[in-house]
Each structure stands twice: as C-alpha cells, then as structure tokens.
Image (cartoon, rainbow, N blue to C red; front, side, top):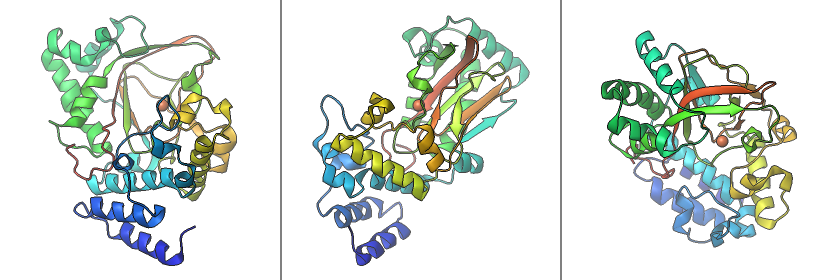
Length: 321
Ligand SMILES: [Fe+2]
C-alpha cells in the first residue's frame, strides 16, 4: 500500500508530465510505487505474461499486486495524450465508422480487387498489400487508397502522424485482403471478448459491401479507463501471475490479451454492440478496448482490406517512431 504523500507525488508527476520530462518522470513514478529501479522492459510494448519463456518481471506477484500492469496502462495513455489530440469520436468511443469513404469509381475498383482473391482470413504473402503495391495493379490507385486515404485517418486516430515512419511501415506490412468465412457457433477464439494489448493501438477495415451479420463487436467507451476497468485489469493481472486465473478465459488471457466475460463487462458498465457498416465504409477501432468477432446465424463471408498500426513504442512521446 502506498502512503498519502506518495499518492500526492504520483498525482503531481502525472499532472506535470511533458514530452521532455516524460521518460525521467515515469521512471521516478515507478520507483515511488514499486520501491526499486524499473527493468527497461517495463517501458516497452512487451505484453506477455505466461508464455514459454516468461520474462521474470512479469512473473512477479508482488509487482502485480502493487499495480504493475495498470501502471503501464495508465502511463502508456499519458504518452498517447502527449503525442497529439487524435479524433474526437474515436477518442470517446474507441471506434469510428466513416461512410462513403472512397469515391464511386475507386470504391468499385477496390471492391473488384478484393473479390478477385480467394477466401482467406489471415495475412499471407499472396494477399499482402505491400506485395501487391510493389508489382501489379494500378500503382496510383493503391497509393491513393492506402497512403493518401486510409493511412492518414488511422495515423491521426492513433496519434502517429508522420508518414515516413514506423507507423506507415507497420500499416503497410499488416494490410491485406481479408475474406473471412464466418460460420455459426464455430468456436472461433476471436469471438470471445478481449483487449489486444495494454496500450492504445489501431485496426482498420475497409468494407466494399454492407456488413450486418458477423459485424465486428465493440464495447464503446472501453478505452477510457474507469475505476471498474482498472479493478478488472488489476485483479486479472494478479490472477494470471499467481496462477489463480479462470482458464475458461483461454490462453490469450494468460498471455496478456485479457478476456472479459459477460459478467465482467456488466461490472464495468460496458456492452458489446455490433459495428454495422454500409458498403464503402472505413471502420477504425482501438483494439486495446474490448471487442470480438461477431457470430452469425448462417454462413457469411465478410470482405475487407484490413490492417493495423501497433507500433511497439507505447511510452514514446514523439509521434514519428
Ligand atoms: Fe482482437
């Protein structure tokens, strides 16, 4: 337990954080809270708890009980706030749908392009946008759609605005044609509500067709850390570390992509809702918030180009890394 004076110190550190003092002050906050110097891995994107080779720091119950996980969540958000102001709707809800995203002619070309691919849920060499952009198709079209249209929205939302940087690199390496075959109650692990990582990150989908059944499910507001959410993450980070976690939550939970069961969501005053989209919409979501793949009542194919910006420097206050 920390004292009232220590609490005041942490409050002051958080209040007076700037781009310039962030690195030093977060180290100081860590020392006050945990009574030791931080291992450098604290201030990275390393998310793993239980894996084959768990880093010793993330196996320490004493640190988790003092709030190591929520400390990282909170200070990563401070860095995020120092990088820029983002987009209001996305900041508030954690998800945003932009309709009529491309002009009609471009939208038709991208739809034809997507539908020319076979069904494939995951990124493969053959469906990667980076590969496509480097050799075939209309280069100007791809430059226009990905670099000038989709990327700027994503970079602004996740507050990584410079173009020739790690954010663009990650965006390009993760973008691909996703044709998802969704069958009812197929036990898909992606249908269990979860948070991907402890820090703000982004996934996008451009949908050439209407999406109703099987739409992405999102708990709006789940990127704002309420006391109830901090309680959940504190409790579960301790449970994973001391081995008392409920294994129904599945392996992803123990690795640091925490699963929220319906009761957990209710206790956090959160509710999953389908993010339906009309044809020619861009959906962007902060997948550190709670989300999952929607179920269907009949086999459905959902077509998209899909990608992410998840730069593994969550404690960096410069926006070009
Ligand atoms: Fe996810």
